[in-house]
Amino acid sequence: MWAQVSHIFLATLTRAFGLTRIPGVGAGDYIEDLKARADQGHAIAQSTLGYMYKIGQGVPQDYVQAHKWYNLAASKLTGRLRASATKLRDRVATKMTPAQIKEAQRLAREWQPVKGAP
Image (tube, rainbow, N blue to C red; front, side):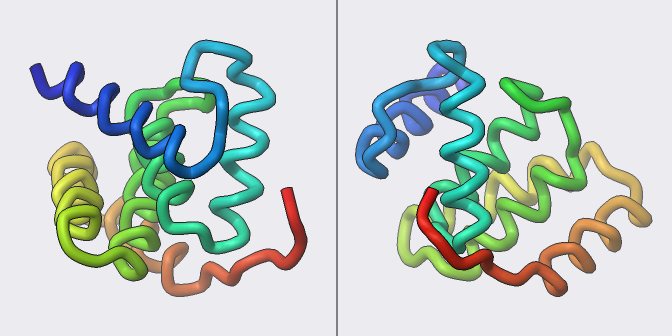
């Protein structure tokens, strides 16, 4: 059930964010758009990219990257969206070693937004 809820959440956020494709449909362009927006500091894109790294959809599965993007999103979001990003980050952390968590936190601390439009 969680996978179904996550997919619905992801599709809703994707459409709200203005991206017309959902994972698995034109995935290459979708991922590039998503990465560009996440790199610019868009919290919804960051959370969505965290999800993509968590499940390995369109990108290699990478819990360190997933944790980093969820952490960045949680730092900008508020209310339920922040709670969701935090919960997803914490779930990913249960699959990581302490060294991986430390690396993800370092990457999030050192992250700087990229200027420009996707």
